[in-house]
Image 1 (cartoon, rainbow, N blue to C red):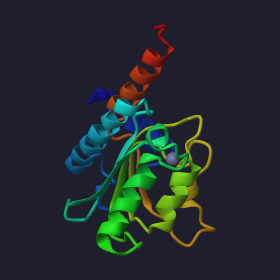
Image 2 (spheres, helix red, strand yellow; image 1 turned 180 degrees about the vertical axis):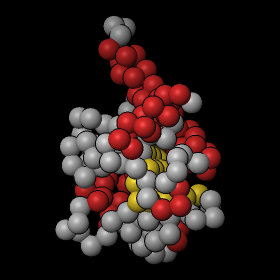
Image 3 (cartoon, rainbow, N blue to C red; image 1 turned 90 degrees about the vertical axis):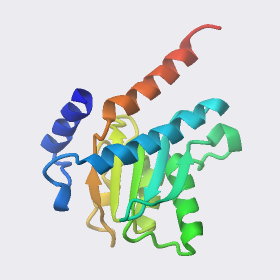
Amino acid sequence: MPGSRSCWTRCAEAGFAARGPYAAGVPAPYDEWMRLALAEARLALATGDVPVGAVVVAADGAVLGRGHNAREARSDPTAHAEVVAIREAAAGRGDWRLTGTSLVVTLEPCTMCAGATVLSRVDRLVYGAVDEKAGAVGSLWDVVRDGRLNHRLEVVGGVLAEDCAELLRDFFRDRRRPR
Ligand SMILES: [Zn+2]
């Protein structure tokens, strides 16, 4: 996927490279996990919600929680994909601490979701497209790697970024089109 590769390179150049055993590049599991998040994102289209999707994945690859943006569907400004997925994972685990898991989301999280990710003690955040207008994982702020907070996580950016961005572009283009 040339698109995601180039974004990955840009992210790495910008200092957003992954730490740990996956630092050499984007390994296969991230692509697989992101495809699950993309499938979630498409579910948001049914209710006219901006197509962003997220999954919480355990270290063994088990999906603990899924979520898609549901602000319109639920009339809830906090019903972002990440928050929905984190809530499902924590409820299923019976523990608010999601230690040992990865949150995989199609778009760079906003401040609320970056904060929720830190609070849930997720080990790793994997995201797709960069959100230059509202992103809080390197674009406008870097909430998840702020040394003043007591939990920091590994970040892997730019996974299937082009697929994630295309879904959003198509959504906004269709919305602008006169009916
Ligand atoms: Zn958010």
